[in-house]
Image (cartoon, rainbow, N blue to C red; front, side):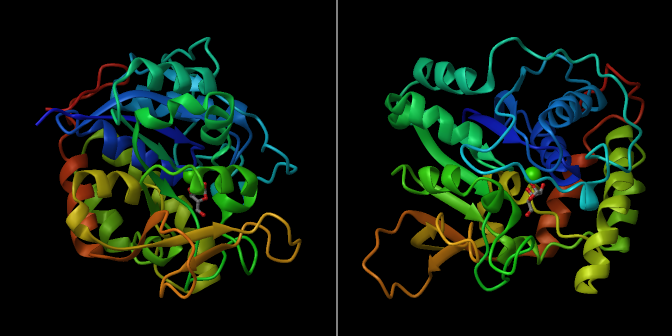
Length: 325
Ligand code: RIB
Ligand code: CA
C-alpha cells in the first residue's frame, strides 16, 4: 500500500518533537511532504528552529520545513514556556540546525501542495494551534477537496481544560482557527486530552526508550524527562501526557484508539470559556457530526509502537547522517 501523504503542522514542543520522530521513523507508511511550523508553545522563531533541529537529530536534513503564522488569527499570542522551557524543547541541548528553513510561507506551502495533489490525497496533522491550517482554508477554500482527513491534537471533553478550566491549549491559543477547521467539512479525527492524558510517559517507559541506545531515543528520553515535571506536579501523575504523538500513532495503528463520530464545536465568544470544545458525545443536539472524537486508547500498545519505532533509528548515527535501519 502506498505511503500516506501528510503535512505535519507543529509548534515543537517536546511532544511535537516526539511526534516528528515517530513519523520520520515510518517512511513506508507516512510520506511527509513537509513540516510547517506555527507560534504556540514558544514563539515561531523557536518552533521553526526546533522542528529543524529534530530533522537534524533524525538525519533528515532534506526535510522541507516552513515557517508560518507568528500569531493567532485574532487573539493575542499565548505561550507555554512554563511547561516546555525557554527553548521549547528543554531536555535536549539546543543547536543551530543544518536543516534549512525554506523560503515559502507555510500557509502558501500548504495551499500549493494541496492543489498539486489529487482529490483526498493529503492528510493534514496539526499538533499545535491551527492558525496555519485555518489561514490556508480561508485564503484558498478550493484546497478542501484535496484534503483526505485532518488528524489533530486539541480539545478536551471529560478531562476539562489544561490552560483554563474550560480549554485545552491548542484550541485556546487560536479558537477562531480551530472553529474554522472544525467547520470545514472534511473528515476530522480529534485527539483531545481525554486520550492524551491516558498515555503518560512514566519513568519505566522513559527508561525503556533510553535503553534503545540511539541518539533519537536519547533525545526523546531527555525531553520527556524534562517535559514531565509540570504535569507530574499538577496532576500528581507519574509522567507527562504524550499529546502530539497520538496523532501519528493513529495514522500508524488506528486500532489503538476508540472514536465516536459526533459534533465538536468551539467557543469563540465567551471570555470565561473561550476555546472550550463542546463535544456532543451523546448526540443530544442535531449539530452535524463533524469529527471522530477519540475517547479511549490502548496506552501500553501506544508505548510499544513508539518504542519499536524509535528502535529503528541507527545506534551508530552521528548528527546529520542519522537514518533508520
Ligand atoms: O495541550 C497540549 C498541546 O498543547 C500539545 O500539542 C502541546 O505541544 C501544546 O501545543
Ligand atoms: Ca504541540
